[in-house]
Image (cartoon, rainbow, N blue to C red; front, side, top):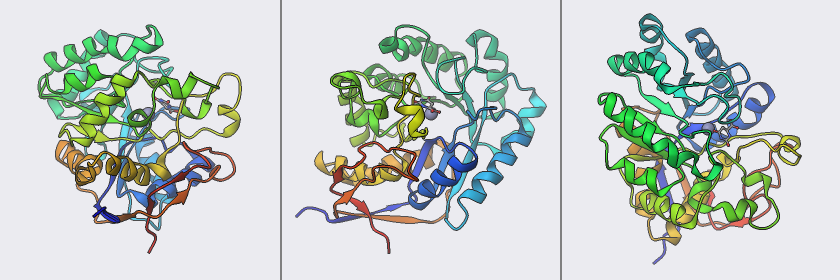
Length: 335
Ligand code: DOR
Ligand code: ZN
């Protein structure tokens, strides 16, 4: 007897780009309609790198998502922070996000050398502040995450009490690393469970599937999917939903980012059902994250049902989602 519906308790998106102003006004409510909370990334045009900025941005997110039960878990953009700055910010944040300089959208102010970052990382370890990492080197694009794994190993060994989240992992090697160090955790996106580089660039180029890290090989996707379907306790769902206006995607010099927030839960239900893993979706989209970070999102449940839905061609006429115009087998029940 196939399952026709599934109710998720407090679904969480542990890696989300909400942007600012009109874009925040457009995408904020879409995430808040389906999720009880989300980890909000700090890579705004001017990065969120002070407590004052963080509090101001949280107000903007709260205003854009008002009317929904939704808790934003805020992050700071990594720079050198003093003990005092960390202590003041700690009650207001989930963690600090480290970007290698220039690795992706709005990361120019990121870290140029990990060694130089270590004094702040040590202070974070002492104060119990998690480190969230965009783990890519500046090497050949397909190898950037694999090359970064040595840095994850180094950080995990040097700072054994530091909680480190490998954000949006894309390789079998990163999955394997989860079991090698107690203090390493990871998020994985929707697109990296579903696509490979072939879907991005194997035929006609699909800019709406172009993101950083770029999608990898079938064996990488298989390892990510097996870990998600098996509810690996150190793996969390983080959409990395990253909206850009159509004009910045369908152009020369396409911006990196796949917009998935409003389709993520039904597509995950379809994927987990297809692989006979529906009973593990709750752990993947909420329980693991709650255990890892000790967060307590507000009470909210979302029912998914096996009712087909056509994915819109765009949201607000400007942001094109993954699978635009296609039909999927599941939808969020609105009642
Ligand atoms: O594809 C991506 N887009 N990867 C990131 O790391 C950042 C994101 C964005 O902010 O657009
Ligand atoms: Zn991201």
